[in-house]
Image (cartoon, rainbow, N blue to C red; front, top):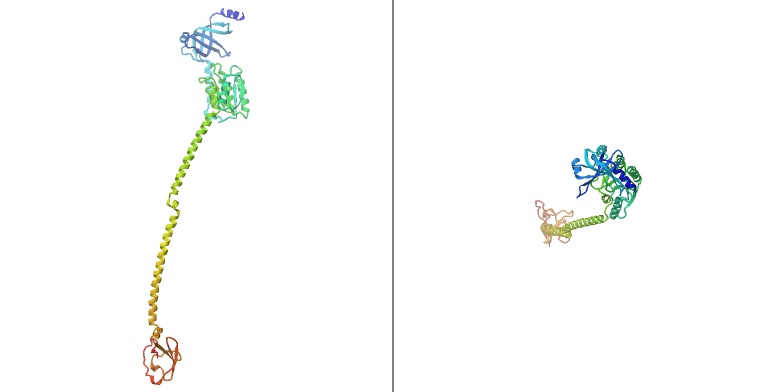
Length: 408
């Protein structure tokens, strides 16, 4: 009854002009109906506007999110859901929406201050000991992050803080959760996750205070807000931007199956490299062993032994030849010596006559009859006296060798 009375009262209202900002446009395929979410930036209120596609194309062609428009509409109350909406028959676009303009201005400001600088973005740890997760309570984003992360690495630990992810209380709660996780020494990475939503729903993640809080965190922050097409300002400040919460789970922990596969591939490469190195070294050793000096190490000694033997034989032959020649020369010399030696003359029967003083008698006239003389023979000596009947006059001639007389 109350809903009907409210609907009846609203139905009595006439057509009005409403100024607002387009937070979201929904065009359903196959129908001419277009749904607009019209937002009042100053009052932080929004209202659904239903209109025809022709009305939008005629009054605001190329209408985009964030555009500032004026609609001529009639309020309607849907009793079944208790919701208030506007049915528009005319739309006029008055320029770029104030909201997007503010966000664009804030984006330029933060970029100028270096909050978007890629040089300051930190790399995520390969395997974090604990992951901090900031998300809505019992949300699909929380389920996606936890499920996919544990599927990839079953032992990963999480510290989850549930906060409001839209509305006026979202920003303070998210900032407080960031401070708590950043102070936790066991948390190695922080994930800021939220599922898809309208541009209006994602506005807290473009708040300046939140962006500065993310920038001030000592712990690496992963932003996983909305879908691929949603790009709030916190995505530019975070160290890593994930397109979805599922993508964030893939970025924060490695895949155990992939790591085992990579380890297997690395092991195979290592085995091949080691085998190749061993083969090369074996070939090198074989080449070294095939060298004559290594394959037959005694050949060098044998060659030198042969050379030494040849030199020794040559030396022996030379020495023997020299000895033989020296022996021959010695024999010839000995023969000549024996030929010239007085002893040889004595051996032929001659004798040497010497006076008593030892001088040799070379002529008969050198002695007188009765003088004692000594006859030196080849073997032994004889004492004799000069017989007077054998004396002769002395003769003068040079004394070259001892006089010899035939032995009796």
